[in-house]
Every structure is written in C-alpha cells, then in structure tokens.
Image (cartoon, each protein chain N blue to C red):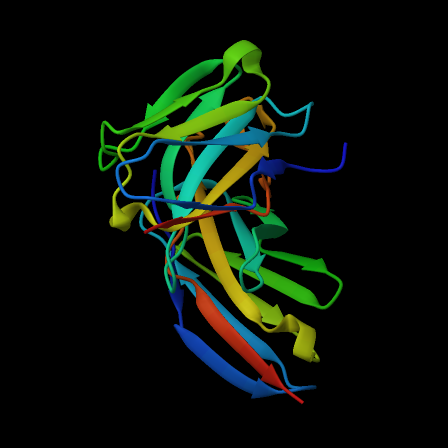
Length: 116
Length: 111
C-alpha cells in the first residue's frame, strides 16, 4: 500500500456543474473520512464510513453533497450543482477503528476544487 | 465529537529554538492526536497519546497530556525550517466518532 490516494488532484469546474472525487484508502483500514478545508481553516468534517456503512454526516452539509463507499473499498464524493462557495480542498482519510478507539488517520493529498 | 482548540494561533521562531503549542478540549477522551500539515498538502499523523499516558516522545517531538486540566502540549525541540507547517490537535472521545479539527497553530521557523 502506498497510502491514501485521491483523484483528481485538481478540478476546475463551472458553477452549476456536478463533480465527483474518488478516494482509495489503505486496504486494511475499515474507516474512511471526508473533510473539506478552506484557506486558513482546519479541516471541516463532512462524513465518514465504517466499511460500507455511512455512519455520520455533518449537519452543516448541503443536500447537494453525497458520498458512497460501495463494497467498503474506495469512496466517491459527489457535489451537484456546484457553487463558488464549494471551492476548497477536499481531503480523504482512512483509519483502523477497533474497540471504540480511533487510531491515527492517514490522509490523502487532497483534491483542490475551484468553481468558476 | 469534540474539537480541540490550539494556542497560539501563530508562532514564529528561529531555527534551533524550541516550539511549544497547546491544545485544550472540553470532555473526556480516549486519546488525543497531533497532526502536521504542510502548505497545500494533507495532514500527517505525528503522535497519539492515550488518556492514561502523561507524556510521549517521538524523535524531536514531546507530547504531554493533563486530563485533569483537559489540555495537551506539543513540544518540538531544535526546530528546523522544515518544521514550518500548521499543527492540529484532535481529541478522540469515548465513543470513537470522527475527529474534529480546530484552526491549528501555524508555526514558522526561519533560518
């Protein structure tokens, strides 16, 4: 395993278009997380999966955002009808979760989205 | 989920000096984790300290945890220019929900 992979690294899209990002976690990790980060801020939690089940979604997250993790492997994050406010770095992380304990997260390099 | 609050927000030091940043949190934890983020990159896990530990070392990093004060500190000794980054603490609660990150401490190390 070479770590968490995210694709694409950069995405420029026009306002109103749909975009989809992919994340490939470390294969032994059972949890996968999505975060969004804007300049000068810390990563903002969006959602996470344990295996294929989506366990939590941020209440601040618009209905335009949806995430899937079919078969508990890779995950996709889709943003529909993008807005300029969606411009951010989208970070994916994976971790091993055992016995109510969070172990260290491994983050990908992120997908930078620019909505023009 | 709970968020840690890092202090100071920004720290500027010279190479060779030590850097100390602090983290406070509100409720009981299972463990507390520190991460580093270089500009434009993802976060890198530095160290995890469990609630029953008081101090942990990793290379030039020293983390302390005081559960009675609900606080932690990260000490980087003999700083290098390559330590320039943002540092985040993330308390992990008893229920194991997702980590929530604050704004972090931005460390600048000049040569």
